[in-house]
Length: 389
Image 1 (cartoon, rainbow, N blue to C red):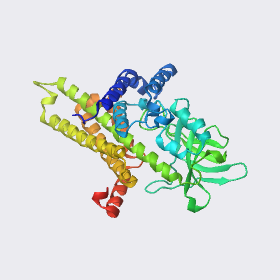
Image 2 (spheres, one colour; image 1 turned 120 degrees about the vertical axis):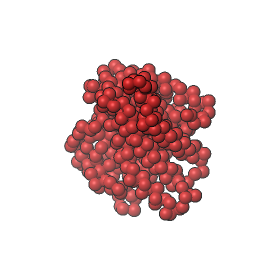
Image 3 (cartoon, helix red, strand yellow; image 1 turned 60 degrees about the vertical axis):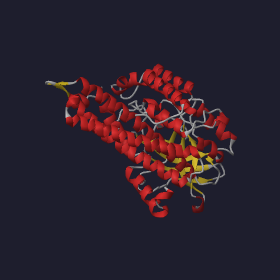
Image 4 (tube, rainbow, N blue to C red; image 1 turned 180 degrees about the vertical axis):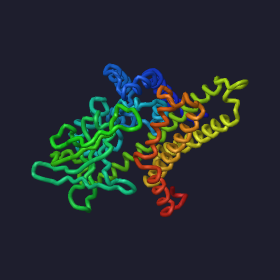
């Protein structure tokens, strides 16, 4: 059940698949049983191998030393990376194309922050969400301009990978209301930044999701991204990219769950027949495979729309929402069915489907919940109709 891809994309996909099978999957259970942590030398090796492959620069322009891959190629890579549990595929930073656009007028920002991401020398995290965030974008964090620079005050929740980051992309209100929200690059060791809470979550990841409080954090003017242009425009670019890669990871997660459940059912003896001979199990696997195929078609078509060019960004935004909505909900249904097929063995933490069962649940929430995606889709339908979506 394959999407028609170019030989170039297939070769790239095979390279990433080999990396996943040899460097990441063997460490899932040790990570799970050790609070998500792995020996430093292991983490260093899987990071270095990712950098050798060029994974931090998949989306970075070739003119800056990145791979400049098409969105289809990136989706193919993230689909393979999605076969891994415990967020072990988050072992490298990402220099995304929007960063080069946003920082185009600042050689300092490019050299100090963006290029080190590309080279794997620094790590980033996004401080966007606030306590009041939900169905609507809420930004109460402020950045007040002084003679020394901006003083940032506020609180950011769910700063994923904050514990591993060297700097944060912080969204805040700066200037008058007409300017909108702005993005700032904030060094994590800046005075005035404190962790309010670092809660445990259902998944076992080395990347934590702390809550940060900013109290009169002094940020140089040169760390404001894009001058007085709206930071929300760049945040939306980031959201589109994240929603596509999440959808792609769901394809990989579902693929692995279906394959492992099928292999298990094919050898599991139930009296005089195999488990896979039971019609109830056949129907569950058939539904899983059909939904995976539908999701794959949707995700790759959305990726091709990015690559074709000339597509209205608003239309791309809706397609990303559709892809994330369908793929994440599909993966959750697949996880539930596959765990049921495994029975009691599926509830063991050393079983990949048990880990996926916990891990894919959050993908229906972060980077815009399923309900938010439905609101985006319905709003586009009302304003522009089906043909413009």
